[in-house]
Length: 358
Ligand SMILES: [Zn+2]
Image 1 (cartoon, rainbow, N blue to C red):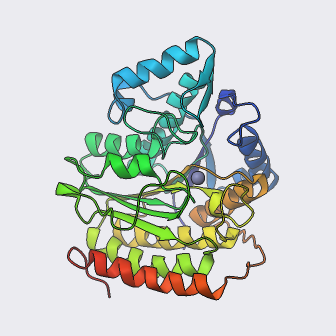
Image 2 (image 1 turned 60 degrees about the vertical axis):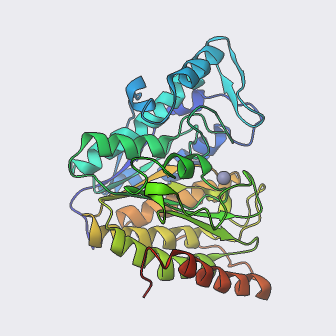
Image 3 (image 1 turned 90 degrees about the horizontal axis):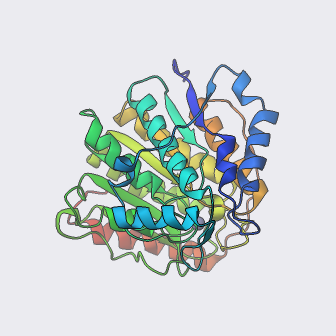
């Protein structure tokens, strides 16, 4: 299907100014990706436009984070940087660049909701999905996707229900707990794939949300070795029925390319075509249910080739570029296949008081 409006790619070279040295989450991730996108001339197709981000203001960040925490990050950066927790390092410019990452997500939201763009990919860093209300976690400073969800709900009548799909190998604990049990917990449904056991060691399958949010928090806990067939089965059997019943007004995606088989930090087996297929399913749901509104935000992924190729593939799906990258599919062992089937049955049972599966 051809789209009348283009896909937006939100990017600025300023994202390279969040200096993390030899840390795995470093600027070469974006340098390599930007290079690959341009080598493939995606901006000459008439289907993809480059959008420059503007920094988010503090009121937007405060929709998710405490002003005390925001001030702490600002001060640490003003003093030249350092470690915010055992995993998360900042440099002098990191505070400003973290505002620019959240601002990149917000401008994508504005342009998609106003129909200027069909959909968008936010090529941003630092990532966000581990960041907590008052703490940096797992390379993340501000929770870009949670900020975007709350910002859209607060500012647009057209956006009431938001579905967040997270395909990073690590649990998006910051996102999940932000919408676990609050006023908006039944309005922002979190559907997170992740490997267990793995950092952060939370977000188990039976953490289904609480109070207002009971039944709105999905932890799809993948066994090490899980790959394209296991993810696709969950998308077909769980995601599809949920998205039809929840009827989101927009789908937001936390895209982590560390679920790729080559990633140095994790043990999953997705391929680039697997990432493309997840987005194909999500985009098709968005087209049926919410006017095609889907925005993807970059989270993790530490094999440079997998990150850059995975992003190109997802943008190709968003913009119908017909670029189809392919990896040889890794072999999935029988124990993992069995686990994948049991997992689907378990999720259906856990969520049967809240949703229908058909
Ligand atoms: Zn990750």
